[in-house]
Length: 289
Image 1: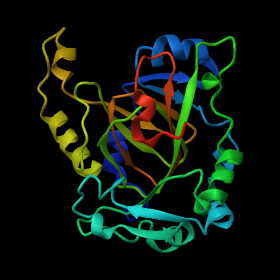
Image 2: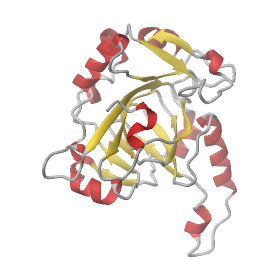
Image 3: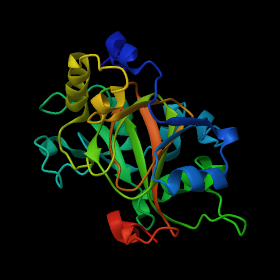
Image 4: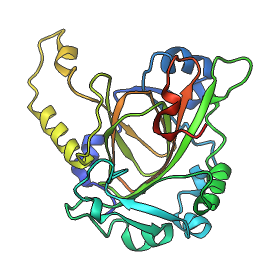
């Protein structure tokens, strides 16, 4: 992954395929999103879902980001929240400015185990360190997708929670985890997702590149299923989907998911709760209500 991608083998595995529903952004509205996805807790890939945001063009240049917010201090980590998960490489995590990370660490410095360091930060709204980055996100990574618009004509009542900024080279990513609803906008690069429906969702510290290799090995060993039993043979496997630049992935609450950047990738994710559910998930993951 030092070349900035995972090489031809991973490109072939990714292949642009997706086992989730895929809907073009122009064909998705709030009513359909509520009735077919959030109310049923079904994950979704929205093709071109963030292309209306200025970040879709501006953030193609990392120079633009470092010029605007390069002084922002962030965490360069092997996995999100490494200390909380007891990651063996947590000692390799470090606090750096975004500019220093882009110029001196990204794709150049790995953990003791050989996995890349990537930037993952919760953009705290009341932290002076994130003031410029928060302003940039609010300016460039908005408005929210139209299918998340709340008004008197829709049944969508959301409480938006924390904003997560992610930037990392090929080979970086997040192990399986779960939380409340979220949507993830990818602005550059490509990202591969694995989805685990409840009750198979779990919290893991197993780096996604290792888990992805194990998943690929399992799939290679699968024997052809008898006609009509294909779904049963695959029911223990996660759903796999590749996200491209400009795409938005909707992650339902309690669905386990794992990500792996197959190219240098830059994303913004946001968690939220939905008033249509009877849930206490508005207190999960320190949502800023």
